[in-house]
Each structure stands twice: as C-alpha cells, then as structure tokens.
Image 1 (cartoon, helix red, strand yellow):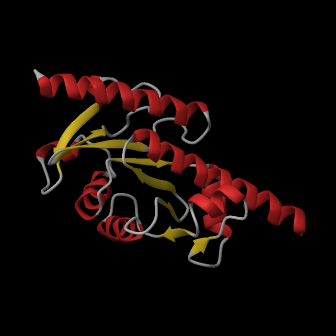
Image 2: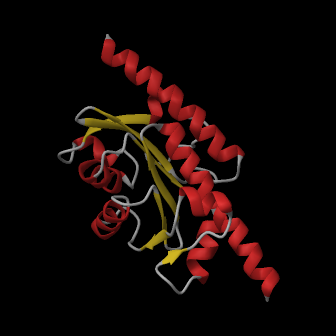
Length: 192
C-alpha cells in the first residue's frame, strides 16, 4: 500500500510541474520528460506523454541499475535519466525544450553558455552545451558527466536537462537556465 501511495503522490507532483512547464512555454505538445528517483528505481513519464496531462497511467517505474521490459513504453530519454541517476545523487530530472536555450545552443561557438544576469551568474555559472542524439548512449554519457558539476545543461538543438534534490529544485534550475539564455539572447541582439 505504501508503494502505491508514493507513486500516486509522485505522479501528482509530476503533473503539477508538467503543467507549469507547459504553461510557461518551456515545452510544447508531448515533448520533454520528467522523472523522480524512488530508491533503486525511478518513475518517469511514458513516451508521448503530454506534460500537462500526466496521470497515473502516463508514468512508469523502471530500475536504475538495469534495463527493463517497461523501457519500451517509458520516455525515449529513459536511458539518459537512468545514467544520470547512476552517476549523480539527483532526486529528480526535468528535460524541457526551452526555446531560448535551444536558440543559444545553435548560435554558441563555445561548449558552454555564460550567463550575464546576476541570478544566472550566482546560481548557475557556465552552463555546458552537450551533444548526442535523442535517447542515445552518447547523450546519456554526456549528460551524466556534465551534471556531476552542474545543476543543468543544454542539449545542442534539443533543450535543457536539469537535476535537483526534488522536482521543485529541478524546475527552478530549468527556468533559471531558460531565463539566463533569454537575457543573453536579447543582450547579444541589442549589441549588434
């Protein structure tokens, strides 16, 4: 009974954060994914899940230490989340398709973005830009390496991935990365 109660609580929390991501334009349609660590497992949104319509039926629990037959219905980024949980102490992960972060990743010639706003400088520092195809081993390795020393990273041409002790903290880092990228984008545009 306790396990069912925890999953019910977590999908409600995932739904709350998913709605915030959609409402603030940080994801569109059924893109992006959310997960939460649960001991030796993690709960992740299913493939094709609309983040503002998360229910008990749109999340799945899979193990951290090995692949599972449920991986085929879990998010296409399950491999990335699994590797991050294996290599970090993250309690939650959010992958969003933040538009200004994607734009800056395409424009940036360096391997990171340096925030210029005071909050970004204070809370983020340089934000790494990582590469790899969607749901690939390459992306899983790049993300888990970057998130050892950063709260978030930007996947080249794809979006952000942020970790936190819980969903709220991962959400704050997601929004902070996007805010810093937006400020940087308009600052660079104004200087041209």
